[in-house]
Image (tube, rainbow over all chains, first blue to last red; front, side):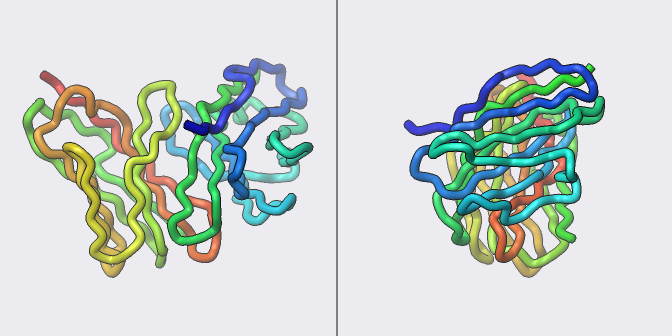
Length: 115
Length: 111
């Protein structure tokens, strides 16, 4: 069964460093998303992406964040200068179409630890 | 802004008992989702509810949606230990693909 994959599973970085989190969405899906979950807290929407551009972003997704689909399979989230409070689990998701059904399938997540 | 509230946040049940988790949301939406998350794992889709009065059942879990009341419920029937997990509701925003999640209900089913 097709699934969303994410790498790395765990990333440790120093405050102020740049990190890139990678996702491979399900191959025929067209809509891509990033969410984050701070330990023990709720899942928070960051950004949605369609047709090579951002379609929606939350207030969390500030200038430190960017997303890119550099090729036909990868979808990346870049944090330019990490802060301690960026430590969280980051989930990528993808969906096939934009309709009311729009079931999103989530990847296993990348745990980001900022020291 | 769409806000989603779940309650209870923590639920400890005995096996064999029934209980309901509630999910309220603040603005009109056209879809509501329930997800399960095991510790350290990703989110597993349980139900997608699209219309007022929608009811879906899978095993011991049943979800319903009342769009007029902006309320969804997840009912657990005769709980078993394997249902122990955190359950999230998520509400879709109109005309967009993104979702807003509730805080989650951490369910523990005790023997």
